[in-house]
Amino acid sequence: MDDSLSESLGRGLRTDLSARLGIAVPVVQAPVGSAAAPGLAAAVSAAGGLGMLALTWSGAGRARDGVRAVRRRTHRPFGVNLVLDFPVDDILAVCLQETVPVVSTFWGDPASVSRRIRDAGALHMHTVGSVPEALHAAACGVDVIVAQGWEAGGHVRGTTTTMVLVPAVADAVHPIPVMAAGGIADGRGVAAALALGAQGVWLGTRFLTATQARTHPRYRERLLAAGADDTVHTRCFDGGWPGAPHRALRNTTVQRWEAAGCPPAPGRPGEGDVLTVDDEGRPHRRYEDLIPLPGMTGDVADMALYAGQSVALVRDIRPAESLVSELTAQTLDVIAGLRRTARP
Ligand SMILES: Cc1cc2nc3c(=O)[nH]c(=O)nc-3n(C[C@H](O)[C@H](O)[C@H](O)COP(=O)(O)O)c2cc1C
View 1 (cartoon, rainbow, N blue to C red):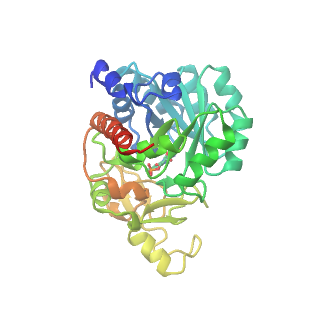
View 2: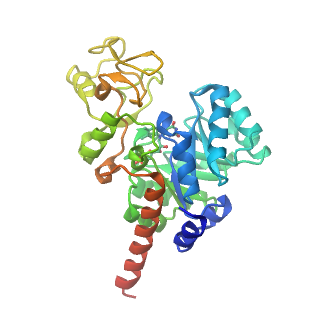
View 3: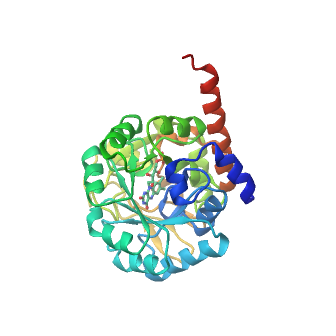
């Protein structure tokens, strides 16, 4: 989308936070692990939202390449995400050297990095799943709190739904801005999140079927066919990230594990099976925490198919730019409709 169009579409949706971030619309493409390709992040940012790279498992060299690849495609702001349960020191150093404007963190103590991020001039966002976690992040000096509800896809921090968590976190950390994550996939969800006190929205599952996302065609097919009840909050796919709860589609791997009574590793059904081989020839085993990526061959549908309940609203594959503009137009329509129907 050209700059003037995204600016004018976004005019009615601007929040203090979007102004602070220098983006036209307060829509963030959540860091969706390996699916968050530079092409996806750049397209979202170029369309006026905030694109994010997920760099936890990339290593410092590939992190630098990823950041530069986004910059080659757009001059707009974007962010990077790091999961603090893993050693990310070198990657953070590279991102700060590259003067990335936004650093988001998840799953760990933001105190360990907050000072460093702000001293380097970047904005620090941290994802939480509860009010106590939000208060701790606020005390650490985090600039933006991302409140992630239980219906979210991928790794899920807490047990409270977005509808309840967002206003509770917004009240608790006021005046620190809050973003809503989990369960949002269309303009109705964006408008609802803004009404709940969020200043921006953080969408993961909706962007998994963007044309620029690094998701295997079979994974996309499963997403397009799934309803909210096809997702499960589980600890099934914990190879690589033990004990971390997540939400994914219930597939054969989950069904067999549940039928066996959810035993711990290494006694799970089919433990050690090689399910797929990637385009560099690396084997991937059942229960690994990796999603199916383009170029993988084998039983891709038995891998971790992360998805939030919002998958019920994901019904097409389309460019990320068009997702951002449709979300914006829908949200403005919803807000205008509410103004028309509201009786004082
Ligand atoms: C495939 C996938 C991978 C994810 N990987 C990450 C990640 O690396 N870091 C992170 O902070 N969040 C990650 N998340 C969680 C998202 O950032 C976000 O909180 C979530 O997708 C929001 O809920 P929604 O899926 O209903 O939009 C992931 C989510 C998905 C679906």
